[in-house]
Image 1: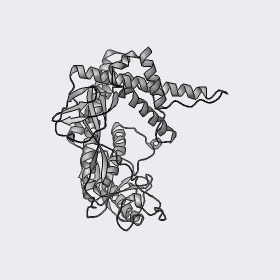
Image 2 (image 1 turned 135 degrees about the horizontal axis):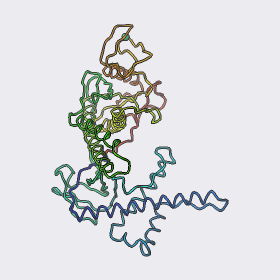
Image 3 (image 1 turned 60 degrees about the vertical axis):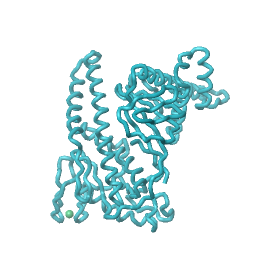
Image 4 (image 1 turned 180 degrees about the vertical axis):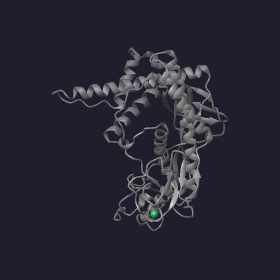
Length: 405
Ligand SMILES: [Zn+2]
């Protein structure tokens, strides 16, 4: 099976190179914002009772940029033409995603977001400790041996996060034939205290580095709110906060990757709750907010990894009462406040860790979803159309192969 895999790693640019990165990112941001403005102008014009004009596409806009380069955008010649071109393509995609209901309306990119990026197309080479980028030349990598050498690479994204530069490359890789791992289906409950609880009793702990950072994050957040608005000290604390946020996100993603790889490799069927709709998330606490943020990432990783390793992902309805139901007798409680760490059943007397109880309930969902799977144990994409999934079960999306590892 051929899959598209993305690799992302930190760059170690010279000062000249990071200035060039910034210039490229500036071109990309300018093109994106200008294109967005042009599209919006067209929309407003079309509200008038005059003949409609078509919304300019990435190709139209790039042609306009090229014409303007000769007049007032001469500074763009210093950077690769790919940067604005790819930014305009991203804009088209953002519009498409919005109109097809997959994303919010695109926003203008801010210079101060600390999250600049640009994409280049052309020959990219990875050699021992270096990556050679079109127009930018050889850039040192912080970590050697991670990016696949000798792979055929056609496009590369360079992005900044709080002052550090990263490169992300997409590579087509051949994966060995998948064999479904033997064993019992498992349910996984993503928690606040532990990273995840598996129905077989395994508890995947959050790494201690992450826990320490999270405490620090809370501390800095309090500091920011204590500083006077508009003061230099507040700005400084804000920068510290965003650096800490980035670090926490990195550590979390890393921990999630370890967990999802283990699950997809060793379990035949993995059941998770489907992500709750955004309007139902209420983040009263920071820990809760972080765990909600990583939930989507957890499911996203499981989606493609289960396909890579031949496991099956089942998503239970977000309203399935996994925490309120007793995994022993099936009785459903009316209330199960977050503070109650142990599930106590009044009917059968079961006492069990709340997360383990939820995970066991999720594991049960696998059994009721088994009939939607076809006899060969093929992927969910080939599920028979005439067998509608039972209530409470949704078939996992099977086309998500793009990974951000
Ligand atoms: Zn019970």
